[in-house]
Amino acid sequence: MRRMLVQGAVIAVMLWLATSDFANSRLPEASPSGLEPAAGTWRATPKGLSSLGPAAFLEAVLPKIKATPPEPRLTERIVHVRKGDTLMNLLLRADVPRSQAHLAIEALRKSYDPRKLKPETEIALRYQTVPAHEKAEEEVKASETFDGMRVALRYDLDLVVARNATGNFISEKIERPVLQELVRAGATIETSLFEAADRADMPTSVVIEMIRAYSFDIDFQRDIRSGDRFELVFERFLDEEGHIVHNGNVLYAELEIRGKALRIYRFSPQKGIADYFNEKGESVRKALMRTPVDGARISSRYGKRRHPILGYTRMHRGVDFAAPRGTPVLASGDGTIERANRYGGYGKYVRIRHGSRFKTAYAHLQSFANGVRKGKRVQQGQIIGYVGSTGRSTGPHLHYEVHEAGKQTNPMRLNLPTGLKLKGKTLTAFKKKRSELDQQLADLPLQNQLASNE
Image (cartoon, rainbow, N blue to C red; front, side, top):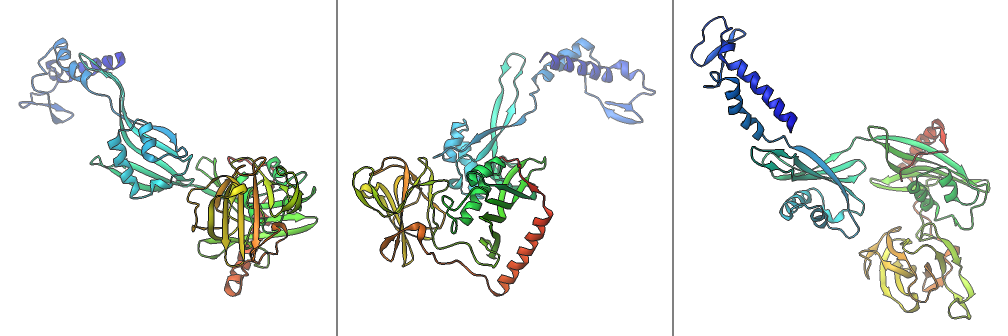
């Protein structure tokens, strides 16, 4: 503040010199009333100030300089959506006035439904901040005015809410510039596929996508052996500074088990709908997934066993997958939920009907996913609940059953219907895409150590 006063005083003296009789006395000729020559032109001078001395000039001008408020500056405060948050609650928690929060949300709603915001979504709250300054008789504290927000909808898309020229909030979606590159990576399995992928520092999201694609044909608990290997090509996106902002889809994968290579390619037979196909153009997707929970181990197989609670031998008509409490449970296939409630010793229980031939059941859940209820349609791979230990259970696990034509059957030995087989022009387009990927694969160096932010 002292520096501002000194600077103001210097400016005031310079103004006095420029408008004083001393300055005018050096001009080559007299000026018309109220004007003085400057580099061959005439300029107006402050009426009545040119006749003041330096001290009187400072006394007249300095209070006005001191009272001039500092320019506001734009600042941002980063917050994240919490589980169960509404956007209104988040803004109120950040001390945004309710009236301003309501107007900003209404503007945002014209471009995006705020109910779709997911936990951990980053939101930058923007403020016009006026720094603290002093008037002639009092000190004025720093003040903030809520100016809008920037919502990170995707790695390449922001939703910005800001004030327009009239002070009203408006919203706009703005694309972030990103650079796409293809990454080829591979590893040899010693103990497990996850361990090998972690050792090679591969992105977790990419490895899970590959496992899901193979899970219709491969039992990752029993089929994988030491010495098997895998390789994949996936998309990676970088920002303008070269930082990884997103790891995208797996475009190609090869899983070699006991010397036999299983290759799959990502392809969209219909606009916007992508799937994985083998080299012949046959979809790897089946009607049902064998393992409806990621990263779990089989703790009890289908067949007779001694019941851990009841103490006698009885038929175990399902497969148990041991997994940490809260692990997501996935729908094995497309279908309609027949029941989602507590069901005796099964605890919290979901049963899904998949057409006229198959049903699947999921027991001992900790809780159901949002929207899971009787009559609801679900898609294959959709989260329907979370691993728990409700009902007659000794620890957190998923009890999984498959009912075929009304009879319980072994999920691990199920002869599942094959998926889509490409034909005609679609098959020709697939072969062209496969050849392009094979060429890209040949030109990409194999990376065994990858930087990952996921």
